[in-house]
Length: 208
Image (cartoon, rainbow, N blue to C red):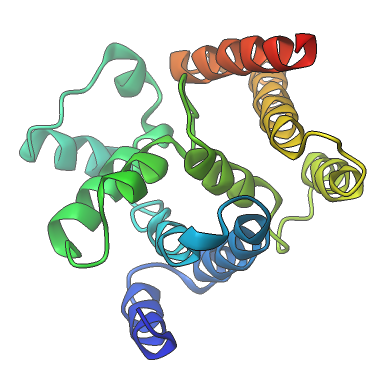
């Protein structure tokens, strides 16, 4: 996929979300390229595509999210019905698959589906989209700034670069859990599963 096709795709997607959300999307694309050059240099095109599609339905209302899932046969758990703000990851993956099949594959769709909540068994590809969404350049809130500094400030000195990525994603998940609990918002089960998963991964790697 050449740069002209990426430009046309950006133009298409820019008409589906607001300017502020689109600026965030471009920030995620920029950040995922930086991360991808370190971890998946042969997969930069697919990473960029995942970034461009990840928030395609973010601005839909909760009712629209639920209605789309019901109309298209996407089963909803009680947790999802109670936390419809996370549904844009599922509806976004579904819209990308249905309306833009020439651009996406299962790897891209899986990463989009997990970019908000995370989940157990996340791949490096999934982690890069999750982290890019968290630390992209337009994000300025304190937790983002601290995590960005943690990752990039520690990357060069990290003896195990993959472990450094896992630790960073674990910290992002933990920050999310702490923020939600501080607001008395129930933490989505997949996020807790992801946190437990990365606890195990980090502990196992640190032992070896």
